[in-house]
Image 1: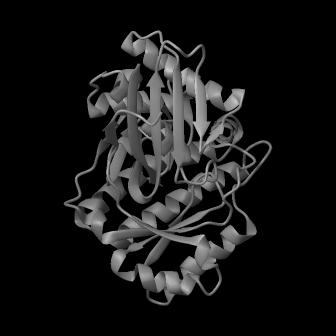
Image 2 (image 1 turned 90 degrees about the vertical axis):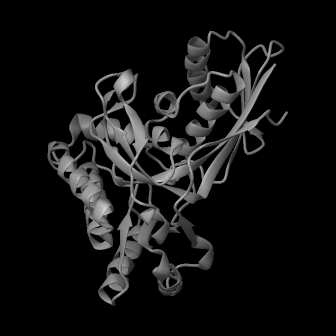
Length: 329
């Protein structure tokens, strides 16, 4: 019996990953840049043992159906091949993230699974290679291996597509992100399906690819200069461009809800009133508000005039993956 356990934190992209050039290897069309956060995380235990006749997957105490288990099994098969192991596994995962609601639960979930497997089978992967392995489960999971600001190099092959931390002199510790939880239910169109449709059919997608490299360069300059206004403006604009591509897909779709628009307009209003803050959104209706840590409480107070306090969660820069000896049985 081989056991391992890991905790990985969610990351929110400031320069978005949107579209794959290789579906099997999960190689992205563009580089992306994220901030790992302490507010949401996944803890995963894995046990490989001869007594198991098939893989089993338990999420938040509930045994998962065949479709959910198949995704985990595909990843475990990659691990087994790499580690020269033939044993089936029991995976027990607890999400401190609403699953599939645009809060990057797949990133923390697959990163934690990769870390737990690495620990259980004593694969001794470097952080770079652990990032590559996590990418094969969920693209953005490669970024959750690291804390703080992280860039995912798109690469041209399995060996060259991985995440790495961005040096920032700990500036991220001065920042905060307020999550406005519009909807914690499972979304209608998954990120995977949304990306695929957009890349294949959206007339706006070439414009996204033409501009994203410049966004990335500018946001990295803003991080080096500790320029919050520059960071926020670039992140907000990049998110709007990403979501714009979905409106020109065939058929068109959007992850926005009426409350999403209310939240975005509120952020603009709070900013215009003198509290610097900027929004970003991933493939879901929830809005994330990037701000300076010193202003987070005042911004939350403003948001509470429209949103319930239970809809607002403040997070700060989070650590990289953490592994533990043994696993929960």
